[in-house]
Length: 494
Image 1: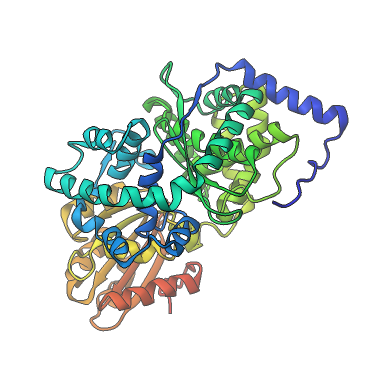
Image 2: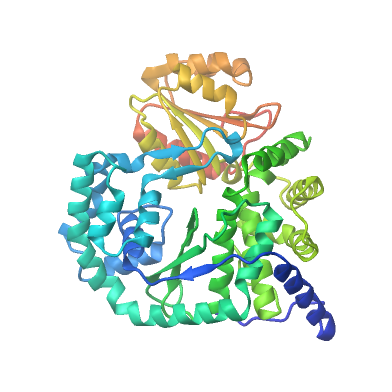
């Protein structure tokens, strides 16, 4: 771990006063309980998602398993076949009554993870998950789980169980000492969450062998699942990550009227950067509170290591941090002044953000022809090269539901993926989108691959990928990566 250096500009009594002011604000808010438990079942489900190649999971954990003697061809085949055996695992529950930019979704693996956090054993988990999947898929999935669970225990859980238990005890002691529950209470006040009385944050750890590497933590409802590098002694860093993840839970717990109010405030801001400052506020705020403020309160200094493993969110969090610190210290809640400051700070830090594909493609409405280009394969191709946090997928692109989504989904970047044999679907999208109409002839001319990217007047990005086959799709995704950004007045990417 790199050496930590004192926060510049804060010395002696000034630093003490700064920390005490923050601590006083945290203590003024009603604390939120943390409850730790060592349970291999949620760790196992995270492992399954990781080992079968989910791009949103820890590559370090996947590589550790692949090096183990348990990673036989038979086991790899069982992992690879899970989505074929239980295709409904791709399904989700979407809370449609919430604002479009804040619409929560619960994937079925996420609901199973929540059940696993409370389950006593695999039989209990199987019972708790009954009804989430059609019975034939449920039976096949749990038959696979029963085959894989002892393999996971032998390969990864049991070799690190002791050190994980020791580390968890240290986390619990440090959390009590530092009054992490009070810090979470202050974060709830800042975010304006409506947290149910008596509901704790349930914390579950899973081991990632090694001292360095790629660690992933995740939040769902009141469950915080933290990946812990087994040879890394960074209690304060992990507690900062825990608060980061808990802030996502608090963000989702804003009541509907509060979400609508915040949504309207960002919509009223005239800056073209407002949609992106809003889109990334959940992560930016979580990093500023968890990796920034919490770590500083625990150690007396800001963490100079990256707060987030993506450059835009990392920079946004650091730009937000002084504002977040001020609001936490004063016990203030997100308001119109905060919104305007967040937009201004994002624009000042990232003037190219409204053009860069790595930013535009964080929130995607994907419309495919459903023929040669199905939503799953196109989604995989995009996710392999871009960090996509929110993904809505529809097919066929020229169908009434997709065309309605084009009109309604104003906060997402639209990606139209159309194969050569389905240009009629593209024609209907061109009719629906004025930004495409000046380019109708070239977009619909038969023959050849093309990539198109332009901004609508309100700043929403529209991308068109027109291909002959899946190989062509890969080429166009690479073309986006090389181009890095769209260029106004030059919508066709050569």
